[in-house]
Amino acid sequence: MPKEIKLAKFAGFCYGVKRAVETVKKLKTENPERNICVLGELIHNSQVIEELNALGIQSLKELPQKGNGICVVRSHGESPEVFKKIEKAGFEVYDLTCPDVKKVQQQAIELAKEGYYVVIVGKAEHPEVIAIKANAQQFSDKVIVASDINQLEPFAQKLKSHKKIGVVVQTTQMLSTLNEIITYLTPLSKELKIANTICQSTSMRQSEAIELAKQSDLMIVVGSKKSANTTHLAEILRNTASTIHIETDAELEAYNELIEKSQKISITAGASTPQNVIDKVIENIQRKGE
Picture 1: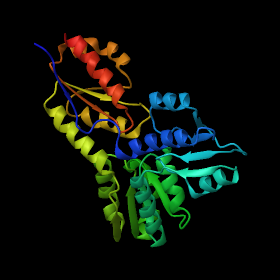
Picture 2 (picture 1 turned 120 degrees about the vertical axis):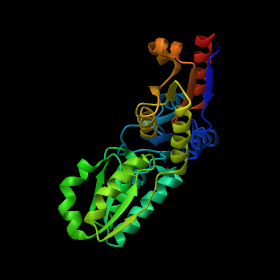
Picture 3 (picture 1 turned 180 degrees about the vertical axis):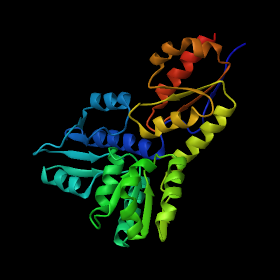
Picture 4 (picture 1 turned 60 degrees about the horizontal axis):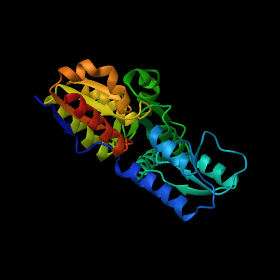
């Protein structure tokens, strides 16, 4: 029997990523003689970064003391201090922070201004979270980051004595993580203000993938291992169905036996995965099915 292969509707580039990639390419087209660079990787996908490099759009690992041309702030955002440093180095700043990430930054700022002890639910080392924290810390030193309850425990007494706790969430976090942290914080606070800032695209992608997993023998998640939303997607799906996380179709070879014995295969992809990478995965599986 031929394999039944389904592709999730919410797979691949989200609005923020699509906007970032298209805008950077357009910037280069409109300014062919100018230096166009991005501070960090524009998105967490090596194929896209290689494509941008080929167009002459450089990813900077760190900001030089002196520069020229246009420096793009990627969709994850940056701290106000970094914006100043870019301008001081001599670049023109082009801000491509995702609108959803901007909202989280603004919510964190408002909570800090209103005197809440700000808890950011997310991974401390993630660039989006670093920028959210830096924005809130302009107005308060009572800002902490936690990706689970264990990371909150050392602050339990401080949170309890402060009484007012405000919560924001990294846009690509799992709802289950937010719920666990809210449950932990509730008895510690007299006033708990929660801004569920998980982006709609992430929520829809996760919900759809879970429903697909219930009907599948195998789930394939396509996207970078550095991408938070992609790794979370794979984590969630492993609770429902046999799941593999790959970056490109070349990695399918290692799972030949699993693919061979799976009749119903569903594919989803992270928000920074290009359509051509997803297409190659589908074509590869179809060939194996034949």
